[in-house]
Image 1 (cartoon, rainbow, N blue to C red):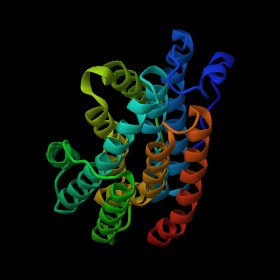
Image 2: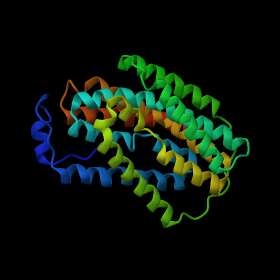
Image 3: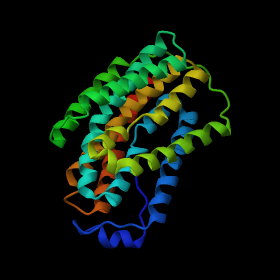
Length: 280
């Protein structure tokens, strides 16, 4: 996912590690308020066009965690962002737990409220388990990829979705508003949470939850499972993004690091589309 360039001031200090990273408030606020909602809008509309699996696959990109990580690198410094990236990798294990729990509960006949409660419980439990986890970034990436692959296999055969009803403008407005609130909230409390917990909470599946709830409500459990499996498979690009950030953000300038992370994530994300489309 390509991230938009910041103002000229950012490019002047980004290549100098250790220099105080003071960015105009207006620039970072604009980034927080606009970037994630726009990305969620694109993912939602694409999902309506090509089906819930593709919508989930697109949502598997670091639609919120990418902007959060970028803003953290600017506001809190590259070292903080690097440590948060490791926490975010472990957060993907919690994301997989969320998707598995939601899918299994929905397939057993529970409504969206019961499925969501079970999924959020699984996410919270996994976050507590891995909160203190620490591995070299490469080993953490390998572990996360194994978890994602296993989760994708377990979520296969969710059943066909029903026909999709007309999309109401209010649905889009809710998802976009929550996107802005999540990015604003996480970056605002990042210093108090610390890099590890801030990173682990950044993949919290607010948008996955919204998309799954709407899919289950409108098209049945099969659509929700399809969407969440697409999100799990799409998270390989997400993991790649965080691998690059965690390995390079305190060694390179901020802008090149995130440009490379974005290109790498998009490349890996494209490779997973074949698997997702076969499952549709």
